[in-house]
Image 1 (tube, rainbow, N blue to C red):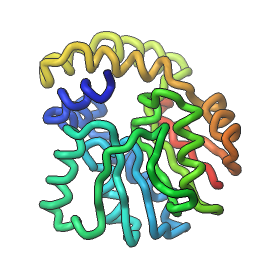
Image 2 (cartoon, one colour; image 1 turned 90 degrees about the vertical axis):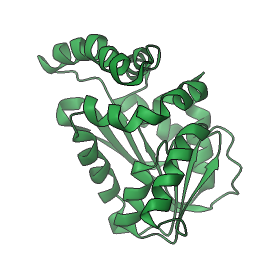
Image 3 (cartoon, helix red, strand yellow; image 1 turned 135 degrees about the horizontal axis):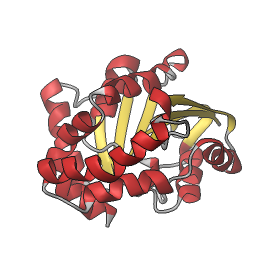
Length: 226
């Protein structure tokens, strides 16, 4: 269902993201990538890469030898591939159709793994985290960026109205797809967040697990080490 939904909204996905976040999503991406700069990873996998914005920015900021973007949506990756081609980065960035709960890569392949706005779509959170742990090198780093539900008054109440009314409305106007942007706020609400997600990350073997809320709790950045 998720694969089909993202294939359908692929052409309008970027415009919707920037519109609904008022462009703040660009700041979130840079913040997440900067967390990896001290470690200078050479091999990176960007899970749930979507239309490739995070992968392209990570490649430009981190200068790895290779970055592989993985996703279950071929429609989204088709747009990502075209962006990479136009940017002249095809030698450094590649894409692969992968289910994050059953990755085809060998153990200890990557120095860093990133997931930007995709962890809530995992069919199994524990399996996805376990697979990322498996293919990460010892000492490698995990960075997760995910939308979250604010907890403090009055941001919590304002966000509730925004997510229940405005997000589906904007989604219908731009993408003409009602279900996708009804799914978005529901998936954010249902997603494991904060300390609970940190505990899930620790359960599969990660250490030094930390999280930082961004923009009044609308987004959260998680980091961990294998």
